[in-house]
Image: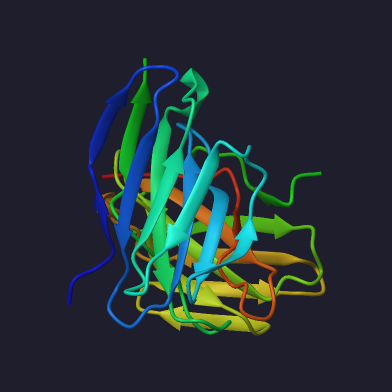
Length: 113
Length: 114
């Protein structure tokens, strides 16, 4: 079975530009979450989507937005990129409930120059 | 106080020894607890999760949870050089359908030397 797939793998953008990151969850997983991981730190929660609705949002500015599609895939958009947005962006999918783990994709490495 | 704190590390153990990784959390409402392994340049990989007090064993790995002390640990028996990685503790304190928010610690770097 395919795991969580993310695209692109790497991305270089200029300050002020906009970026869209994509995620396809494991088949059967309806919950998708997005995380930002800066080098040397643990991942920070950005968004969670379930059944195409936003179920949680972390402490990130409005420049960050996301959506989930009917096939449960998801996009993360970041506008007006700042140098500080350079990070590994991780998508995780899961079944819903306390008794399930979260599987991460391989991530998108975003570099803002 | 950080929501999730891990022992600062780095932790270095000889091959074959037991590695002990510790994590404390501040929210008493936390409901499930996860240990992830992350190799350099890679994404986190789920090792174990636990939601009931006590021990949970899976091969060489044992997760221990003590909700009264707000403490969760991971023991790695017979440590191997391939276990060298950053270990992330994560806590889920959401309810209802909002299960996607994991709060992570800063990670502990483990090195297993031959």
